[in-house]
Structures are given as C-alpha cells and as structure tokens.
Length: 354
Ligand code: CP3
Image 1: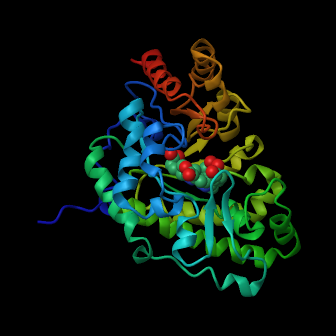
Image 2 (image 1 turned 120 degrees about the horizontal axis):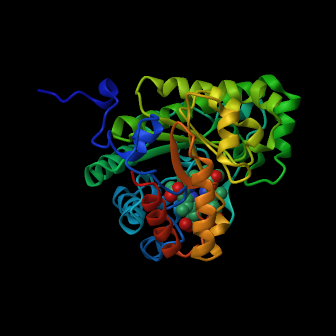
C-alpha cells in the first residue's frame, strides 16, 4: 500500500495547526506567530553552528539546515518553521556564478543584461537541489505537527540581484531593462518564474505545508508598472503551485500601494510591512485573503512594555480580519535580543487565546 502523496491530498501532519488554519481563514485557538529571518544571526546557537561555514555552503548541508531551521522553533515556540535556505540557492544550483557576502548580500559575478545572457538561466529540476529534498524530509519528520514554510524569491527580486549584480538602492539597471526593453524583460521574468515555480514544487513535494514568495524589493515600483511588467510572472509562479492546495504567501517591503495587486497575482495570504495598519491593508487587499504581519522589527529594541503596546496595536487593527498570521513587517534584525522575540510570541499567544 502506498500513502497518498501530498500532491494528491495537500495535507501534511500540520494540517490542523493554528498557522495553516489562519492561512485558510478558519477559526484558530490563538493567533499564530512566526518571524521572517527567525533563523539566523540573532541566535547565539546559530552563530555557533555556522562558524567556519559559508552561507551558501550551509544551505547545501541537510543536517545543518535541519538544525538551524529547528533552533527558533525550540527557543521561541513559534507556530511555524521556515526552511533555512536563501532566495539565490536555485540560481546557484543552475550554475550562476554568485556568492553571498557577509553583511552585503548576494553578489553575481557576471550580471544578466542582454538577450545572450538569458541563456545562462536554464530550467531547474529537482535533481539540481537534492540537498533541499533531503533536508525537508528530515525536517518534516522532526517537526511533526509544526508546519514548515518553504520559500523562494519572486521573479522581480531575483531579477534585481541578477541585473544589478548585487544589492541595489535604486535598481537602476533593472528598471532600465524593464522600461527600455520590455520584451527582453518579459522573457527574463518568465524564465525566473519557471525556476522559482520548480524550486517551490521541490519543497512542497518533499513536505513543506505552505510557501512564501518573497518579492522583497518590488515596492520600488508604481502599481501600473507592477501590473504590466511583474504581475504576469508572479502569477505564473502562483498558478504553477495552485494544484497542491498549500497556502501561498506573498510578501514585499514598501508595498502599501501594491497590496491589492499582490493578492490578485494569486496569493492566499498577503504579507504587510509596518508602514500601514492591518485594517487598512485588509481594505486594500479585499475579501477572500488572509494577511500576515506587521510589527516594525525595530520595535524589538524598545523594551518589553513598548513591544507589548505596539504588538497590541497590530492585534487590535487585525481583529476584523478573516485570517491573521502575526509576523514582523520584515526580517528579524541581526542584533535583536532573542528573549524579546520569545516574550513576544508568549504575549501574542496569551492575548489571543480563545
Ligand atoms: O529564517 C528565515 O527567514 C529563513 C532563512 C532565509 C535566509 N534568506 C537566510 C539568510 C530567508 C527566508 C532568506 C530570504 C532572502 N534572502 C531574501 C528575502 C527576505 C528578505 O529579507 O526580504 C533576500 C532579499 C535575500 C538575499 C540575502 N541573503 C540578503 C539580503 C542577505 C543578508 C546579507 C547580510 O549578511 O546581511 C542574505 C544572506 C542571508 N540569508 C543570511 C541568512 C541567515 C545571513 C548570512 C549569515 O548568517 O552569514
């Protein structure tokens, strides 16, 4: 007898967890909490196990990935784990020469700017990332009923790193390509959509019970440009994984004006940064979607009273939402006191227990 695969059922052992219930807009025992970048430099146990191993190398070692992914779950009692990897891992896996420089971010040796450069973006298949499949199998066995969130970078944010050659404030090369050669741009984003979709499928098929598409830098665009030049590629990614029935989360920074479109692209859950209140975000996104967010990560430096007050404001603004996953408005900052995060989880759970 063979067990039905997740592809057939869309179910994992975590199916009835508060996190997945909130994503599906079902009643929850308490508001679920997790933090973007919950695994990482804020944790001394992370710094210890990462010592002497480069970031991308770490992502290719299933036992290390498993340990790092579990660290914040053990320490903070968060309601979901997020797979420890990076948005550039699938690009590295298809042979793009890139590295993650500490304190800087992804750096690409030869930026992609011409039609000929596109040929370097070959399709990804599961065999390119065996360490991802192996790590997720190990993780889901350890996690039991705690859901594992898989993730990938969205086509625009990946394109930004590839075209600029590294992190960028103004994305000028990226926008030059987008505005100046719309056809090449569309082909670039379409290739990235296929790579991203393939990377998410690998994670879902190995056992991830939700996925988040990070379009971290797309807030640099006006809505009309987003709709014309980015949304088709992001929608292609969401469509490609729709059949699995796992919640699809979509997040970006500075995206207040784009929230409605990011939902329309095909997300089930829309991530909100800290710049607009959750009730206003809900109006912009419209019915039929859950929301995730949105405490300013810098609030964690202000002491527990301030954290409680600001987290309370987030929860109050989210009261009328169809589904709310509590999170920060962006990733945990590396110098955050981990105890502040643990206490925040406790506070949200207590305050929302029903
Ligand atoms: O806990 C988690 O959230 C899971 C792990 C995770 C990492 N990167 C690990 C990482 C996730 C979800 C990412 C996604 C990612 N990577 C994004 C989207 C999320 C966001 O923050 O908007 C982006 C834009 C990247 C690209 C990237 N990789 C950046 C900007 C950096 C930081 C560079 C630095 O040193 O400040 C990285 C490296 C990286 N990815 C680290 C971690 C834990 C730090 C490297 C280290 O610890 O040595």
